[in-house]
Length: 270
Image 1 (cartoon, rainbow, N blue to C red):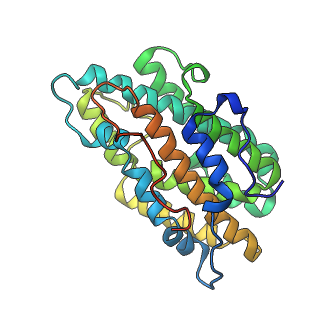
Image 2: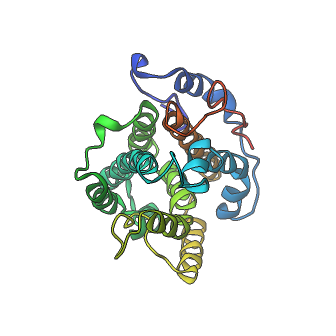
């Protein structure tokens, strides 16, 4: 199977949005033009629109950008927050589970960055908020699809895991301090309770993480085709994130997703 082959998940478990993603993948992932720029720069530029689409999901905007008062207060917001943590827990646990067979020597500097080991922190946050850490039962189809993609590329094209590392750093780690402060303030938390996943990195620590991530990505020994595939896969990772958030928004109290839900309104080539 090719590195950008069809996403594998039993057909009867796929939502209509997931089927559209799977069926249009080959057409949507347009080739990336060759260039001599560092891979970290190509990733930033080549995924800008997909990244923006994922960050602008109505679920994340409502969860981290809206008011916490009134009917959409602590209780309802906590339900949404826990639902989001459960999806992340499945993704991070899956990522950690595939590392033993995927982290070959040339990829180790990126794939084994300690900051990506977040499953234990997610378990602790889930235990704090709801007393248990069940994930499988609460994982939506889109999250299971995303996890399956991680297992698939780890087996068939492990260099593509670099794309998922980049996406998770941008989506989760670089936004963590602001979200941690919001959650701690909203629920009047102390001593990192409930916010271990997001942590409390300082601006200097975040800058150092960005520099280290970019340096390690640029230091990978990759063929030109592999670099292009990583950029394509990163677009896919952001698109999967958007699908997960769109599903979480469906029927969620206080959240009104756009009519028809997520429509894949961006080209994976941008």
